[in-house]
Length: 237
Image: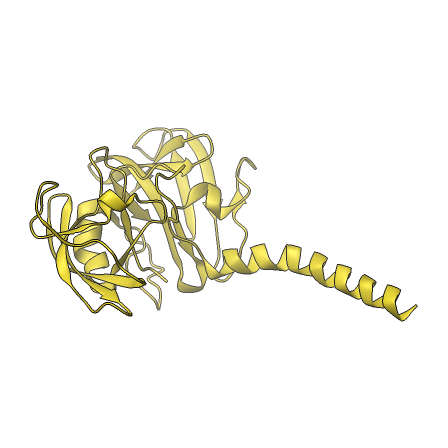
């Protein structure tokens, strides 16, 4: 009898963890975690306010395609059309406890950006670039757009970056110059905690690699490949 009760308790705990673990992971937040990614990153990132309206054209009197709303420390996202169920469908980076939500940008015109507002079916629409009143206690990026180069130079340079899981070894090599043919400084790292950016030149970064066992060598790495796929991403957490 005691054995049966113990088994029932274990089953209940496992079922509870099955539902709680994904919710906690989402609440904790996410950033890009694979290469190549199933998500489209476009030419840069838009830092979404908690309420954002998506328009068919870059003008306020055009058709509204979608309205999205998310909140601080909340794992859900509200969708006007009901076609979007999760922040992971919309954002490439999402840390609700820090009030950070980033959408991929495909195009830019004066005062507007075209964002991918549903990564599952690659739905696109326009949002106006305006500074909302909701500047948060964590950052003042809300409502702004950064090309990936500016993002790396202005944001990632302060925070450090990490290699996306799946980046092949040939692209993880530390080189003496910003060239695929340059000599290799180092290519075998035990445990890379972070890459601190020193200089950005085109698709290359001069970085100091923080390796917990092998020291902190400096050299050049690619931060995106020839197709524009990101190889590293900023430590937003």
